[in-house]
Image (cartoon, rainbow, N blue to C red; front, side, top):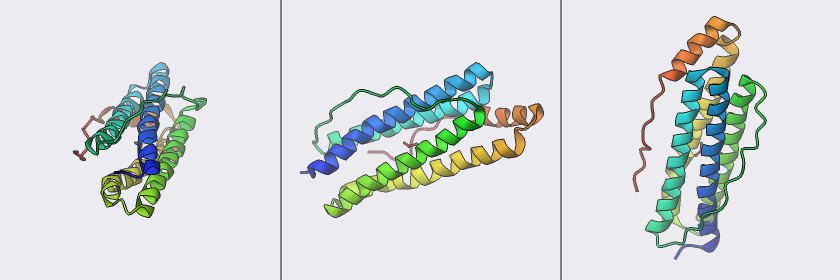
Length: 170
Ligand code: FEO
């Protein structure tokens, strides 16, 4: 039987990951309106990955015979006032998600819930990658997107991103 605090945090994380998907869909929508289809593509795929993350938490609870309780998804709250602002909100958001994952990990550790810790190991690594990707995007934008040609090239690079399903299988 899973510790109730750990279960609640895992259950909440389903909602947080779906909220992340919603935020990235909002970012994608912002870039669609700007006519930057590569940036829009990059965040659309990001939204798909977040939905996958939610499903992994959902499936993990069910596989452990734990109850899942779906909650309302909040409206995206970030004010999207410039391209760079959007990219920075992306990093800010990933740092928040990292802290949430670490918090669940700490509770699982306290409870000697080694199974949940092992499940979360994939997310700890994933968060490291997501923060790096978000940071790289900011750096590239600041370095190359100050003129139309640079922005065009960066947009083309981001258009090449393709979706791939998560490597974690439950
Ligand atoms: Fe599922 Fe980007 O954290």
